[in-house]
Amino acid sequence: MKLFKEILGYALGAVLFVGLMPFLMWLSCGRPALWPVSSVRIAVAIILMLAGLSLSVWSIVYMRHKGDGNPMDAFGHELAPRTRHLMTDGPYRLSRNPMLSGSFLYLIGFCLWLWVWQALLVFILYVVVMMLQVRSEERRLRRDFGSEYDDYCRRTGRFFPKRQK
Image (cartoon, rainbow, N blue to C red; front, side, top):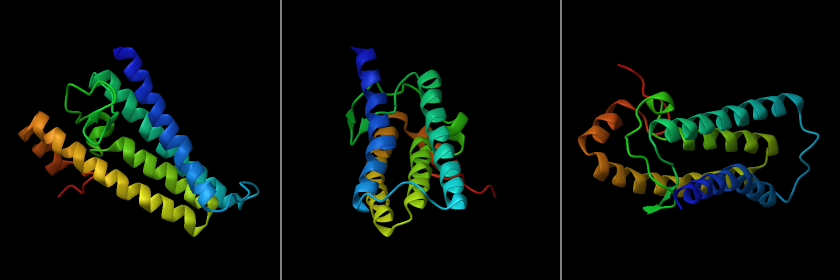
C-alpha cells in the first residue's frame, strides 16, 4: 500500500504541475498556436521551464532519499507517506519550498511562451492556491518539528534564498 500511495503521489504531482496547469493556461488563452514563437522568447521560456523542472525533480528525489518520504500533502491530508525528517540540505537549503519554486519557474516559462495576459492570470490564481497550501503545510511542519522548523524558517526563504547579512 505504501508503494501505491507513493506512486500515486508522484503521478498526481506530475499531472497537476507539468500537464494540467499549462493546459489550463493554454485553454484560458483561447488555445493559441504553440508554434511559431519568437526564437528569443522560446529560448528563454525553455530555459525557465527546464530550470523549474530540474529544481522540482531534484527536490523530489532528494526528499525521497534523504527525507524518507514524499511531498504529496494537500491541505493537511496525507496523499502519500510524509517525510520523517525536516529537509534543510540540498535544494532545501536554498528554499523551504523548492518543488514549488521549481513549478513557479516552469509556469513562468510557459506564460512567457504563450505571451498573453490570460496565462498570467491563471498563474496568479495558482500562486494564491499554493500559498494557502504552503501555509497549511507550514502549520503541520511547525507541529511536527517545533523549534527546529522555526530555526530553519529564520535562515531559509519560503520560495527564494534569503540574502545573507
